[in-house]
Image (tube, rainbow, N blue to C red; front, side, top):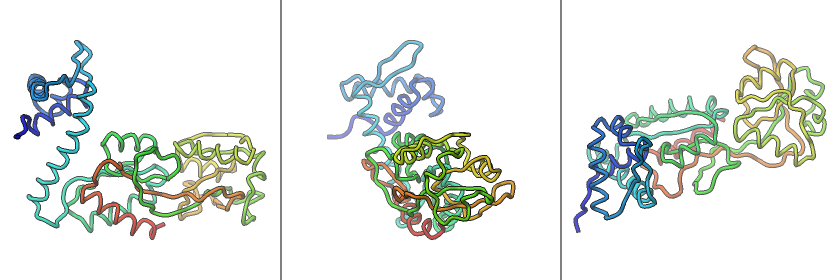
Length: 302
């Protein structure tokens, strides 16, 4: 039986739900609010169910049926776009968009070489990359705003598939003149009375506190910041120590002051940098190519 709805109607309906109003959807889709309203009404008539509740001066909200349709429509529209791109660009030639998010502390050492190398190998692919807190990026991934996210494995939400890029471990960052800087391994208990400069960019802050609490330690937090380089600069100035996973290849701060990294004891676990995607969604050929490229090249660069 032929479908009684069109892809265009699904596009307009999805925009209405995304913007929570016909006016907002009209601005996004470059049509009139009436065109959005008509498309939604036609879909409701075709399916025989109410898809949104209309609230005067407060926009619209999807009904349970509307939420179900949004999820199914996203896959249908995605597949339709893939068919269009495959036929217009030629079989075997990758083209079209792929969106990648990267946890901020990983971004500086991963993204530049990854973007440069991937674009050279796949010039027809439009790779858009952004960085930010892991929680924010994973939320965008689960809402379908990102195809892939690079983050640490700890505290990942359920429903994701992953590919490991490389494994690393927590280290202590010290100023070069620190009393423990000459030690090969530093015990967490030896740091118990010292001020902690804490990287407070989710999930790093939680991970640091959990690790110390498992050792029975309550840290003296001198400063919290989501800025990775500020943490390094403050440590280099002798204002405290820090516990970090990411280790840049240079051992100086922005101010040119020396830093020392040392293993810690106990080392509770290895940490893994992973690239993740929604388990319920089939990756596009472009996203699959990016995963494969990242697995091959990121570990080598680290």
